[in-house]
Length: 479
Image (tube, rainbow, N blue to C red):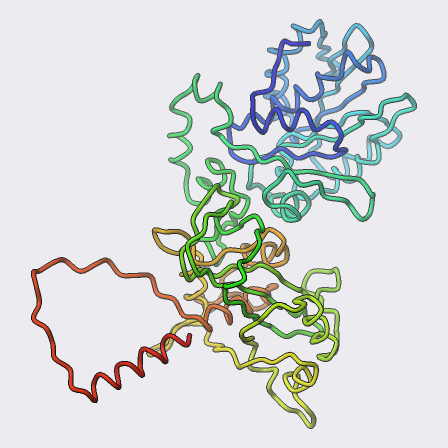
C-alpha cells in the first residue's frame, strides 16, 4: 500500500524499526507523530491480513475525533471501511483497527481478555501515569504467526504524564536510537526523537507554523519547537537544556580529571567523575552538534547509591564505597576529589573521610556555600552559570550514561520558603555533588570587552611588585 509514505529521517527510521516490541516517537510539535502511528499500522495490513488486529488510543473522545479525521484522509484509499458505531476500520482481508479513548486508568481493565497484534498510543503524555500502557501491554498477543507484534506511542514533551514517559523512554537513552532492554519483561524498547524540521511537508504547506510556536509562553517554546524533554514548569535549573546532554566520547589523556561526592546512607550517595576540557572540542549533544570551550566540565561517569526506589539509599559502609570508587575508575589518574564537609566529622571514631583514606580514596572539603552572600560565591549560582555557559557553548555537560544526574537535576524545584535555594526534600544528591565540583573550579562569564578609548600609558612596576604579581598568578593557575 503506497498511498502513504513516511518522510525521510526519523519518521522513516521509526517505521522501519519493526523489530522493536515497543517504540516511542516523540518530540517537537509538527513532527508527524500521528501520521507515523497511522502509517505504522497500515504497513502490515497486507502482510498479515486477518491476523493483523489493532487498537489505538487517545485520552478523550474529542482528541480521538481529531485522529479519526486524519485516518479518513488515508485509509479509504486502501479499501478500508469505517464503522461509526463500532469506531473501527476494516479491510477486505480481515484486518481491523479499533479507535478508542481511555479517559481513566481503570478503563483499561475493560480490555481484559482482548488480544491485539498492534497497540497504538497517541499523545501518551496526556495520561498522568503509564498504568493503562503497562496494563494493556499484556494484551499484545496472538494465536496466529505474527512475529512483529508491537506497541507504538507518540507524544510531545509536557502534559501530566511527562515525567513518567521521560523516565521510561527517554532517560535511559536521551539521544534516542539505542535499544533499552526491560529487566522485567526481557524485551526491547527504543526512543526515536522527532523534530519540526523533519516534517518538510508541513513546513512547505504552512510556513508560518514555526513562527506561531515561537509565540508560545515560557517552557512550551522549548517543548513544542525544540522537542526538549528537559522542560519542567517551575524548575530550579530552568536553563538546563538538550545541549547539556552529550553522547559519550573518549576523554583525552591530557585532560584533568577529578571527583565529587555527596555522602548518603539512608538516602543515596552520589559520586561524579569530571574532566576539564583543555582545548575546544566538537561534540554531539541532544540538541545538535556544539563546541565545548576550554575549561568546560564534562561529567563522564557517575555512581549513584540508590536502592531502586527514588531517594532511598543502599546503606553501604564507607570502606565499601571507597573500594567501589577504585574499581570504577580503574587506573586512571584523578587529580583530586571534593566532598561534602560532613564526611570529615568524627563522632567517637574515625570519620567517613578517614575510613575512605584507609582504602586509598582521598577527599578535600568542598565549599558548601549554597546561596551567594556578600563576599562569597554561591554554589547554585556557579552550577547555573556553567549550565548556561557563554557564547561559545555550555560550560557543564553530562554524558548520556549519567542517568541519575540527568533524571534528578532537571526536575529540582525551588525551596518553598527560600526561593534562591533548592528544595532539600527532593532528590538533590547528584546536584549537590555537582555543586561541589563547580565550587572547586569557580567560573565567571567573560565580561563584554571594554570600549577602545585609545592607547594607555604604561604602568611601571617595582621589582617587589613584579615578584608579588608572579606569585599571585602562580597560585591562581593552581586551580
